[in-house]
Image 1 (tube, one colour):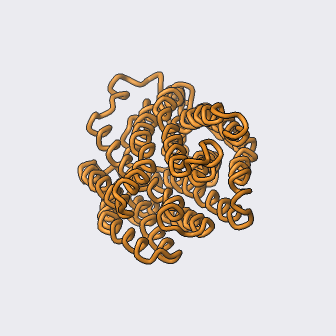
Image 2 (image 1 turned 90 degrees about the vertical axis):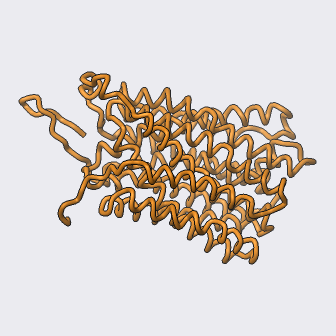
Image 3 (image 1 turned 45 degrees about the vertical axis):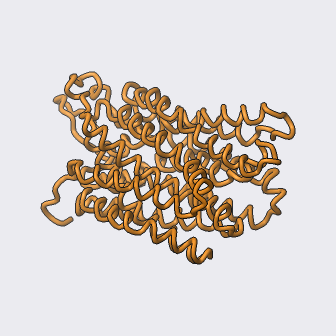
Amino acid sequence: MDTETADGQATAQYLPLRKVAAVGIGNALEFYDFLTFSFFSIQIGHNFFPASQTSHGLLFTLATFGVGFLTRPLGGFLIGRYGDRAGRKPAMMLSFSLMGFAILGLALTPSYARIGVAAPILLLAFRLLQGLALGGEVGPSTAFLVEAAPPLRRGLYVALQFATQDSAILVAGIVGFVLSSLLPPAALDAWGWRLALLLGTAVVPLGLYMRNSLPETLAHADSAAATPMDRQVSPLLVILALLMLGAGTIANYALIYLTTYAQDSLRLATNVAFAATIVNGAFAVFGDITSGMLSDRVGRKPLMLSAMTLLILLVVPSFIAMEHFRSAVALYAATALLTLLLSGAIGPALVTITETLPKAVRSGALSVIYAVAIAVAGGSTQFMIKWLTDATGNPLAPAWYVTAALVVGGVAMLIVAESAPVRTAPR
């Protein structure tokens, strides 16, 4: 962050990595709450939609999951701009508080059997509020990480953004695995998924306390002295950012969907499916941190282009292996491989976008770009995977869908300019 010397000149002071842990922890809690809905989509469908239409119930639940993405651009615009005016920390506090309220409401909403059509309506309302909160989270928190980082370590600092999101997947997978192993299906349907959500709300006070202790990285002078040129965002950057983040989002939510895919298409046991989420989260956290450090050393583009190329080539063979063997080993191996490659591709892309955006509008611009990409791509991915699988009768349909998206994202990565500082000497 910037402070001022006696002569009025700004001098950069950067926070050590351990000091920005509160950003990561808050981010992890928000994504845990948001994604747990997806992992328990089958159980939630049994609660909020007529039991006589189980297949349709899953589609309705996945559609409700997707609806949560519709308000993410609005949250990105409102809370992201707030982060450019009032500061990164107030914006992060606001988004976190809204998420805590929404997830508590979801966990406590009675089932369809108890209150009828009011149940899915409340489910939808709280899901929309979740989307609003999460839409305003990524921009301010990523801007904070870039501004708090030494220039030659921005890749590692911003890697916390995805690493903490993926740690949320890991924790959610562990919770789901434990609950599905200990509880009979009836109990998991009735209240097990609610317990998983309530675990997230239990740590909201801690997250608020930790975020409140952070310094501010946006000095008032940064906004006041900004000229129209300082606020100008390249239209080409916006388009490339949308394509890169959209492709990464489709692949990411396809991997998250493997928990449901393993149960619904591969007919594997529930606890085996949840273990795939643990594999996903563990390898993603490792891949995020590793790719962040590598991107600081070799640059953003060489890393993300290499990882994206391998990912495009291996998605379809991985799904073929899962479909052919229909075993836990095939499921976990495919999940681990694809997760590592995706981390290497999408992490450096987010750093590139954030570094390139002007500081005066970084929080708001990144929030809107990210939220729009996620809303369009992420909100439809799981529904499309399920619909394509049912419509074609081909379990490989998701693989071709993901591959097509990755090709588009790979072209955008090829065009975007390198943003990493040139390293002229080893550390």
